[in-house]
Amino acid sequence: MNPKAKTVLEVSKKNWISISLGVLMVAAVIAIPTFISSQQEALQKTLAERKAVYDRLVSLKGKTRHQPVVSLDPDSVPPPLDAFPNQAMINAGQASIQRVQQESLQLKDMAVSMNVHALLLPGSLPGPGDPFQFKQIYLQQFKTALPARLQSVTPPTDDEIKLRADSETARITGEAAKDKATGEIYNKDVLQQNIATMLARLPEDMKREAATKHKMYMPPSALSIQPELVDQPGVNTVPDIEKIWLAQVGLWIQQDVVDAIANLNGASKRVADSPVKQLLQIYVAPDKESLYVLPTNGGAPAAPSGPLTPGAAPPSVVAINTDTDPFPRDFSVSPTGRICNGVFDVVNFTVVMQVQAADVEKVIQEFERNRLITVYQTDIEAVNSAVMQQQGFYFGKNGVVTLTMKCEELLMRDWTHKLMPPTIKAFLNVDRAPEQQQPSGEPQASTN
Image (cartoon, rainbow, N blue to C red; front, side, top):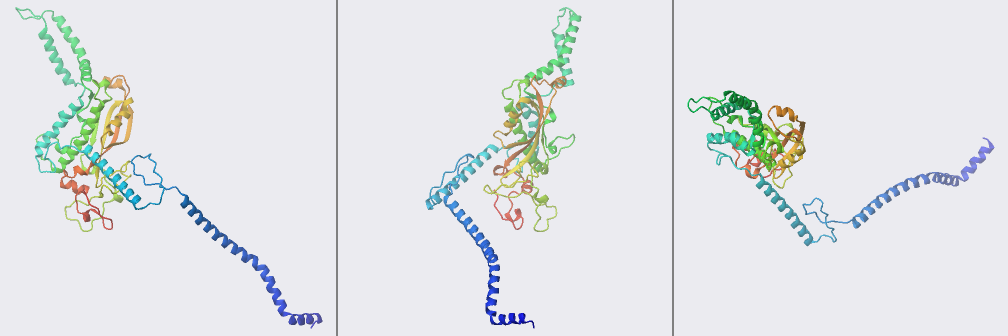
C-alpha cells in the first residue's frame, strides 16, 4: 500500500466522526435553500388566500346595501339599507312583495277586461246552440256590418256603370222638352249630344264619387271567412261546434283590426284624407293548428304515460302555468317568444293595407293601443298612385305604400276557457287534471 494512502486511511479512521459531520454540513448547505424556497412559496400562497378572504370581508363590511325594489318604475332607485334587517323590516319587505304581487294581478285584471270580447250569438258557445242562426248572423257581419264600420267601398264595376248609364239616359230623356200634342222630343240632336257627354264622363264621375263619399276601399275578398260556414250552392251543411269556435275567434280578431282602422280614419271624410286607403286582406288561418302559436316542445308532443285510446287526440303540447309562474317562451316559433300557455293563448294573423307613407308608424301604434296585439314584422312596398287611379282608386296626392303586418294577439284564458268547446280545450290543454297535463318527472300546477 502506498504510504500516503495508508496515512490518509489512518487519519480517516481516527477522524471519521468529524468527516461525517462535515459531509452532513455540506449537504445541509446545499439542501436548505431548496427547502426554504418551497416553504416560502407555500407560505406565500397561504398568505395570498388569507389576504383575499380578508379583502372580501372588508368589502362585505363596507358594501352599501339596499332595500328590495318594490316600484314598477324601471328607473326607480332602491333606498339604502341603513341597518341589519330586523323582524319589523322583514315584515315590511314581505308586505311590499305582497303589494307588488297584488298590483301585478290588478294589471292582469285590467288586461283581461280590455281583452274580453262578446259572443256574436249569445249561447252559441260552448254549445249547444243554433248553428244555422250563428251561420246567418256570422255571414252578415262580412256582408254589411264590417264594411259599414269602415265606410268602405270598391271602385264601380262595368256592370254598375252600365246600370247607372241606363238610369241616367232614361232620366235625361224623360226630362227633355217634348211636343205636348205629339210627345215628340224637341232637339233630338241636342239630346243625343247630352247623353253622349254623360256617358263619356260617367265612369270617371262614379269613381270620384265613390272616393269622396267613403273613407277607404276594401275588396269583397279582403276578410277571412271560415270556409265551413260559407254558403255552397245546393249544399246545406251544419257547422260543428269547433268550426263555430274558430269562426268566432277569427271574427274577434277581424273586429279588432276593423276597429283600429276605423279609429285611424275617424276624422277623414274621403279616401284622400284617410291614413288607411285600402284594406287588401286580413288573413286568419281557418284551422286550429295554424291559428294558435304552439310550443315546439323539443319538436314533438310529450309522450303519453300509457297507450292512446283509439280515435283519441294526441296529447297537447301546451304547458300549464299559473299567474305567478314564469311564462314559457319559444323563440323558434315566434319572434316574441310568446306561446299558448295556462294564462293566455296566442293567435297569429296577417294584415295587408295600403296606407299613407307618412302614417306607417301611426298605424302600427293604433293597432297595439289598448289591444293585446303585437305587430312583430312589417314589410313596406311603394305604390304607384297614378297607376292605381287608372284602375279607379283615388288615393290623393300623398305618397302611399303597401304595408304588410304580421301580428299576434293574446286571448286571456280567464274569459275564453268558459266558452271553449271540449275539442279546443283538449287541444290547448285546458281544464285537465294535473296528471294528464304534466309529463312525468315535472312539477304539477293548477289551472284556471
